[in-house]
Image 1: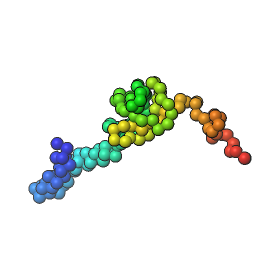
Image 2 (image 1 turned 180 degrees about the vertical axis):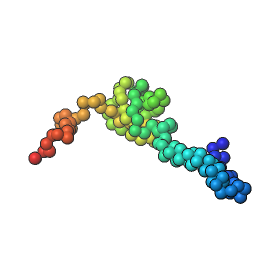
Image 3 (image 1 turned 90 degrees about the vertical axis):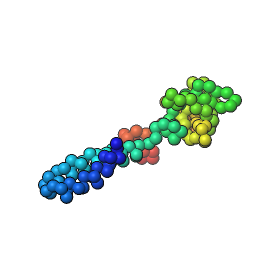
Length: 137
């Protein structure tokens, strides 16, 4: 059905041979507008990122549901995936960020809870706000 809508302007061309120009333009416009709308919606849809499968899981957060010698079983968006940790020692319930995928095994790193970020030698990470003065000013 969609392909017929995309070809509708081609099928409507004979109206210019059959009717006067004023009527043919109105009929052809009525055929052209839905076709353009379908083209626009199709282009927007094609530019959306994938939301499912292996490609759609990279960059998402998950939770460790099982940790054993074979690796980590991670729940990401209702799906269970086998995972290998890039760093850190995982426990059941830890949150993880998916950094990549190798075949059907996720590469993950432990996600630190909010407020637990540190900057070298255990000092808390402090970011300057828009009203804070720059260092050395």
